[in-house]
Image (tube, rainbow, N blue to C red):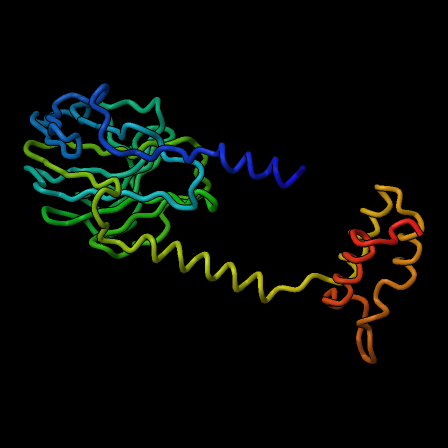
Length: 274
């Protein structure tokens, strides 16, 4: 019954949709969005601090991935090159640069600084100009945001990221023009390689790890006690480690394969009550 329920759950599971284009239903002033909704140009003068034009993706970062990533190619850095790339929540003011507002995070072109909930940035990476490609990623499990430039990772910029965020780009000087890649084309940065390497490292850590024998022993005893297998509990508790414990070995060592086989046999193939 458990197996069939699990299969039905897998059949009905639907992967969350990822951002695929810019949100043209709601975006900042002074912006001209392309028909394919993948590039945007600043057409204002950018004379004042509130003349920023920001735009977000059509969907938030999906929560069912290990790492989410997108890239922005700078077609034209405009008059002052004050482009910002990052993430912001649904309530972000689109007349502000990502990073200036609460629950927003940005990497800014003119000085290479990172910004979060402040108009004052912190040193982070190099500036970026026309022809550069900047990437922004969220490691959802580690709750970290990182950026890349021209295919090279710049390191973790922000920790303890919790909000539901949207890819967000801000433009603020005349003729700035960027193209956004949500994954329809190959990325400059090898994000798949990064994820694969991390998964492999974690797998190796699991394979190298051991579980103390006493912990396994206590877990099995708890199970037997909970389900009322009194006779099996008595037998197991008295002789749980007899098969694999030899000279010089201690009960605190990793629970042996033969022990696991023996417990499984006792529980599922026969004499669980007598």
